[in-house]
Length: 182
Ligand SMILES: CC(C)(COP(=O)(O)OP(=O)(O)OC[C@H]1O[C@@H](n2cnc3c(N)ncnc32)[C@H](O)[C@@H]1OP(=O)(O)O)[C@@H](O)C(=O)NCCC(=O)NCCS
Image 1 (cartoon, rainbow, N blue to C red):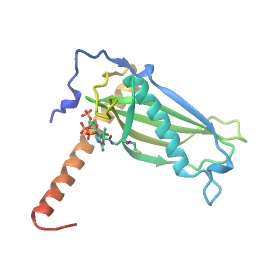
Image 2: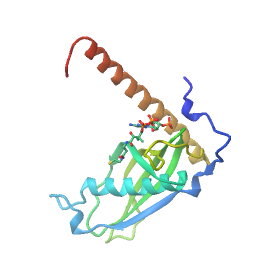
Image 3: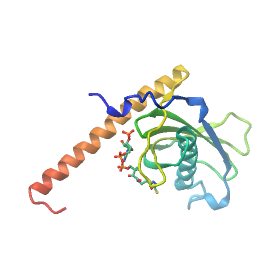
Image 4: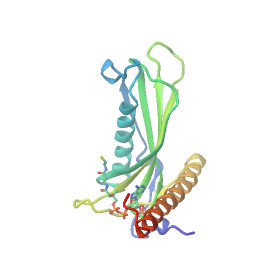
């Protein structure tokens, strides 16, 4: 099945992945903790959304809103004092949307070991105009083998997201036609 979103627009020049890739770093404090004393997942999600939003804005050259966040994984606890790095890049672009991949790393405040990966997520951003309507984005130009792998994997996730949304919409329409009011 072809995805019309991947039709390239010759009018919009592409942008290399590295042009918008970014890292947001933040030291965790007592204000970020949950009842267990480790960092609250929502604090990490906010940093993930912030970093991904910065990348989406830089890639698309204007405002972009979060359309979805999926596969948010928390791999290891983050502790007060840890220096958290949130690394984000555009993995894939469609017509008006972008998938941003995010990796979260923590440098332990009391260890001199390499950073530990503590989380990851994929977010879809839609670029919007001043009226909040979706606008075209430059196609992303993957530069390395890793970028190209991420592009291909993002395309698979995109296909699954569209299929899932369509299947759920059809189920709801079918139930409504059968008289269910749920
Ligand atoms: C995201 C939003 C702009 C989409 O608007 P829309 O009128 O549904 O427009 P479209 O259906 O054309 O979708 C625009 C693009 O976003 C993608 N998209 C929309 N909803 C999506 C979702 N839930 N998951 C993944 N992608 C999505 C579409 O596939 C399309 O991509 P494409 O052009 O590359 O094919 C709109 O729903 C919105 O403004 N949502 C609120 C965003 C927001 O406030 N975010 C912050 C949350 S607090």
